[in-house]
Length: 240
Length: 240
DNA sequence: ACCTGAACACCGTTCAAGT
DNA sequence: ACCTGAACACCGTTCAAGT
Image (cartoon, rainbow over all chains, first blue to last red; front, side, top):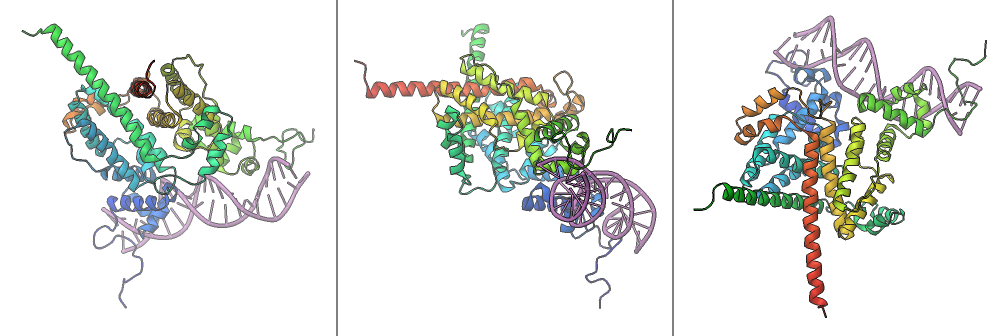
């Protein structure tokens, strides 16, 4: 029989390292996709890679670094949509790309949404967003404020969306009737009147509504900024 | 010597239960306030209460129920501001009350922001918000959309705010210069130009900016709704 | 009814030892 | 240089036993 066919090797491998940081993080993402963050332990991750738990520490500092790495992996998978020239459509597309990535990794998404990363990876999206807002007429400082407002909304909606569990045809229907009845009998008049709408949640509709709101507000602001800029110009530099 | 002076009693206590669900959750909030969620274990919680870990299970189902309970405790501490009659100011005040509660329990806030609770406690805020949006002229369905948009923004900003660590005079100044330099040398032109604004974050200013944006958008929408409603009325019921 | 202690099946991480 | 196994100090939770 062959000397080292299937038996687990120990010590330094002959043909280069079996593990790399990349492979470790990739496996971690797989594990989180499959069973959520709670299914990821250094031991389960090692098992997934067919390796002893301690071997991981040659490639990542600790478990927290693994979680950061998974979040970065996620960030890297956010597609960068081609700009159309209409900044309103492009801001929407950027947000939609984020949402799409979250939909593909619903159980990993909270890692990106919850931790604040000092990641270089995040900067490409930031650059795109600032470029669009610059095109819309916002100076850098206001563009940063606008970016943060949209991002905050995104974090909030996506967190709700991904943590509302598996959905049935876009809507969460589990126990809808019970929830509606409970809201109707809550004793709160406005809650009772809105019960059918509070009991269900169409995530895509909520996402669109919020983005509509934000884009409309930004547009209004951009317009106001343009008109005051022109009138200021008119004042200082009257038409000849 | 006295028979049961300082020795830990065992078995059923004589003077009613030493533990209640309330006391357990209160202690849990204290622990989280002090050392964050990671400082809360069933064992540390029991120690805080001077009790065996297993005693807790007589009052809460498991650790998850404790975390839910702490979140509810937090919800109950959100002050309900007195309405002024101006729905825009009142929506802002409601959001500010939420933010204020988060500022008082920065390490417990993620529990409310991250978990979706089916809590009755949350309904009082919902009722207030829907009432204000009703006064602004929104029908129930649109009011729910608006509420969810504002809530999403709130979750996102507050999550950023509370997880950005301890602050120095309202701003996070740790390593500001390093961050700015890194952003300036990132190779991304818009990022570089906005570096000073990206490196720092005045949470209150961001909060105000976002709320301004949302309230302005809601106002615009309410106005549009009123004018189409009146013109529709004019068409079907012309003035005599 | 309520509290307890031992026990079970897990964790993340350190450290000395292997090759 | 990279992987390993035992060991340490923790977890959450079950269960039988106490009063």
